Image (cartoon, rainbow, N blue to C red; front, side, top):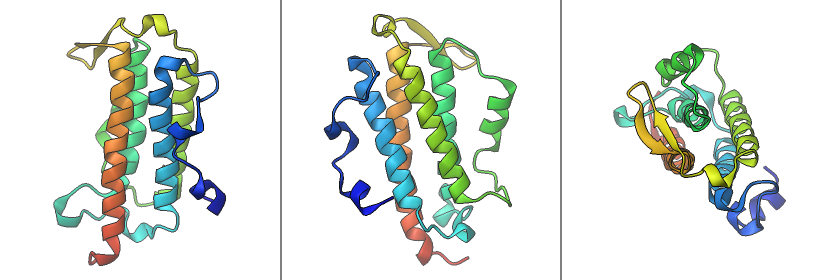
Length: 174
């Protein structure tokens, strides 16, 4: 990330995201902020730490996989669709060490997932935000806006955990 990009105000302070309905701006802002922060936090990250679990906590690799997966899964449910077998495979694989994985690839994958989510937000009719949606195989009832908001806040929570974990890595023995 350039110095100019780092000096910009937070995404929500830059105005509306073009094409995203007004009631969904907070979701778009949170996801775009997460994308920028992940890119910044992971710049120069030493991949030898990617799968280490300091104090038995989640690895940096897990957080990177999980934030992409959460956005993908919750936005799938937002469309009223069930998860595919590939999505279940990705869910089962979250946190499992992938020997050839690089943090830069995981960051890029998250960025693409955020862009897909923003595209979906642009196509979302605000009149449908309180429509019923269902979460998971148990079909837990929620609403469209509930899923979209949770995708944003859950992502932000894991970005914070990612940041702390990534910063601890130089102090963790390999």
